[in-house]
Length: 86
Image (cartoon, rainbow, N blue to C red; front, side, top):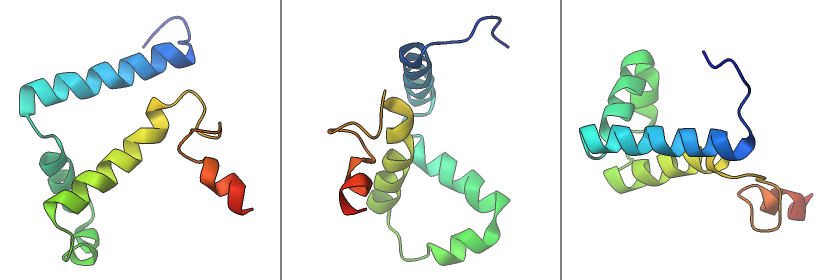
C-alpha cells in the first residue's frame, strides 16, 4: 500500500504502466481477462456467446478508457456524450 496519495496523473501512469507490464508478459491480455471473468460468472459466458475476439477487445478498451482519462466529462472525454443528451 502506498503511504502517500497519488495524483490523477500518477494514477493514470500507474494504470497505464500496469497494463503495459501485463501486455509485455502475456501479449494480448484480453483473452485471459475474459477467461477469468467467465470462470467467476458462468452466466456471463452464455450472454456473450455471440461476441467475437474483436468485440471483446473493444469492450475491454472501453472499460479501461475512463481510468486513463484525467476528466472523463471534459469536452473530449469519454463520458462527455452523456452530458450532451441529458
